[in-house]
Length: 271
Image 1 (cartoon, rainbow, N blue to C red):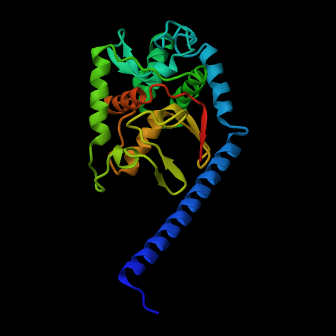
Image 2: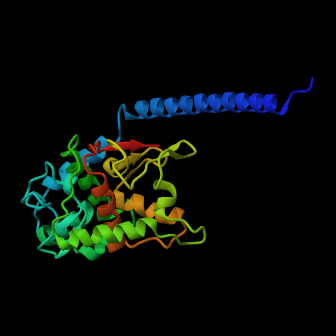
């Protein structure tokens, strides 16, 4: 049976519409499945163990000076934890630098407890004092759970770091010509079962910057934002950045400022 050109166009449009509807239904089913999977993971989040360890380390007298971390100033005053995480990275006058939570903790370990900052920075992820920094970061960040991100941008250094972070976010390079924006610069992206939030704006509560530190189920490790950024560079086939480098801090400022108003769910859990 032959059809006219107009009829064939109608049949083709109908078929495409049906196919799109089927694909959309499949996509929605996949998203629902991912949501249920994550909901199940949240029950008994192992990150709570790291939080407990972090609290112990915070209050324990350690280091050459045999002191606690309880007088560490994270931007809200010595020892004030509530709300500090959701305003980091920020500029600190005593160091003359914009610091994220991890680097600020290392500064306090150096000044209050006598640990050598350079030794902590050089340690491998998940080892020695670097692991202790992640545990304390988890404890500190948890004190701001449910609060909204509102990074300061009053200081010239904070504004400069935002602009540097923005450039780095869109900078393409490496053997695959990738940038952070290649995965996180558009809405609705996904790779395998992993959603790829758009980090050029507020991606929503507990997403992107507002979800780290987080427990990684796939490798049974607690990852900080510094570790997350390091792995992103690795996947782009870039040279791995130095821990606490200006580049990683700048990216943290850029994403953190863009996340203004997002609710922190730390400690989160990831696959």
